[in-house]
Picture 1: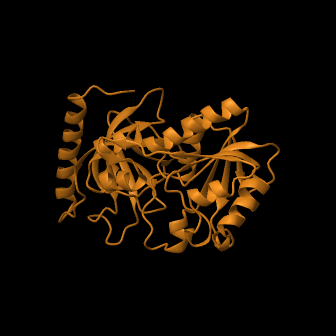
Picture 2: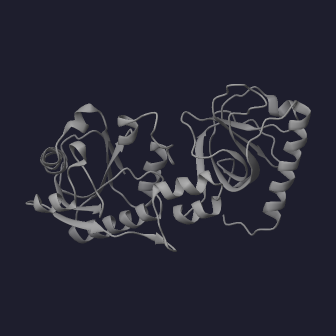
Picture 3: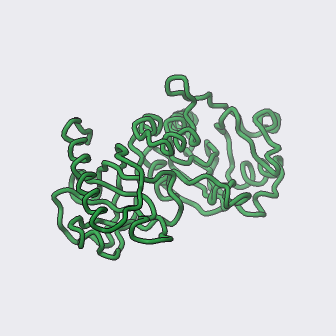
Length: 308
C-alpha cells in the first residue's frame, strides 16, 4: 500500500473514499469493501483520503473526543482491507479554508484524479461544512458518486461515537461487536518506574500520548510477544495511588511471562472490564487489589473459549 502525506499529483485516476475512519469500525469496513469492489470493476486503484489531525481536534482541541485509533493503526487496517493508496491530508487552516467547490476542484479532481467516489449519506466537506452529497453530485462532471447507507448493529447505527460511548460505560463486548474485533491499544513497551516489579507484578508499559477513550482495569490479550497471543491483566489510567498528577499509561501484567521486552511493539486487546480505576491508601492495599484483579482476569479466561 502506498501512503502519501498531502496531495502530490496522482499518476493515474483512482476510485476514492473520504473520511476520518477513526477506529475503522464495521461501518468503515463496509465502505472499504465497496471501494475495493468498485475499484476492481473499474480497473482503478482503491484510494482513501483521510485527515490528520481530526478536524474536531483542529477546531476545538480541548473538546475533541479521544481517538479510537492512531494513524498507524488506521493505515494497518486500510492495508488489511485491500486499499492500494492512502492520502493523508494535514487538516490545518489552509485546508479548513477551502470552499466545498475548491475541495472538489483542487483536491479530488486536480490532485487525486478521482473517477469514482464513495461517501457516507451524511458526508459534509469544505469551509463551514457547506458541502454535502447533493453538491458533490451536482459538481460531478468527471467522476461518479455513490453514497453508502448506514450500517447497524441491532437497532443502533455503528459509528465512532457509538464505539466511544460503549467504551466509556465499560461495555467492551459491545464495542468489539461494532469494531468487528476487540478494542486495542498498540505501542512500544517503555521503561517505567519498576513499581510493578517491586509489588510482585511486573508490567509492560505503554505511554499514551493522547487521552484514551476509556480507563479502568481489564482482562487483556497481548499480541507481539511470540507466535500467539498471551493473556494478562491491564490497567489504563493515571495510577492515582502512585502519582498525584500522572499522565495516562497502559500497564499490562502478562501471565506466566518474564522476558525483557523494552522497545517491542505490542498490541493490547482489552476484552472485559473488571473495575474502575481507584486510589488506595497505601501500596499494601494496592498490591492486594492487584492480586484480586489478576485472579478475576484468570477466571475470565478460564470460562471462555478464546479466538486466536
